[in-house]
Length: 271
Image 1: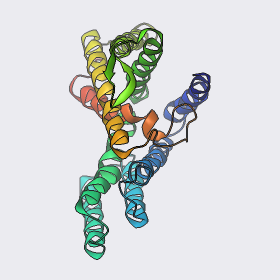
Image 2: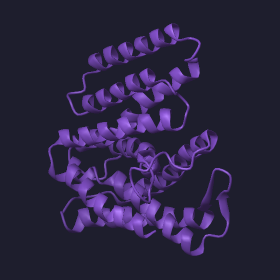
Image 3: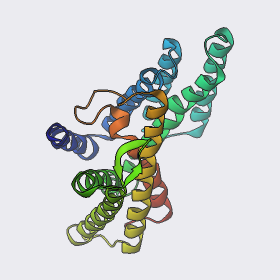
């Protein structure tokens, strides 16, 4: 636990500097680096796709998607890029049909295209009106829920939530995490109201907290299922006490696009 707290104490401020202080391209590059590592963890580390060329092509695509999300995001260029990526994958499958089954092509599409597109919701949120304030919402939802669930689960967790998928998770931790995410989201909205003078929607704030808490747990469990099916404990050792990128940002992969969708439909700040 001590190592986990130390890494968080160092990592979170650095993440905030990138998101809030540095120019938007820094966020895109960070997401790109995370996506490339995630491709390696999801394809190679799990053993689901032990083909170095397939992994490399997916990693390049993941970086491209991340950088594209920081540009003007013209869909014509996106369609050309996706078509090119799929054609390369099809050619690899045809050329190496004995060693690259179709399920690995599907995995490459998820790792190289869908995963970075979901994580890059952070970049897209940052380009919205009030983006500097909105970009913290996925972090508040994820880290608030995860942290509360971790500490409450360690303290009073007795009833296992999914003993086979994730043995350490308890219903007490999940409920505590949900309440923690909702409370922190409310506090953040209160800060926007009282400290920055924005007119905010408190009803939307509660909706964000509830949806974020549920999706946070689902994202965590989804990537835990992949680990169990692959027979690994962690996706990596990049972050001591946390594991790999997918161990730490599994929930963010689902929560960031959820936050983006909610902000587009029901903005938290009244314009």
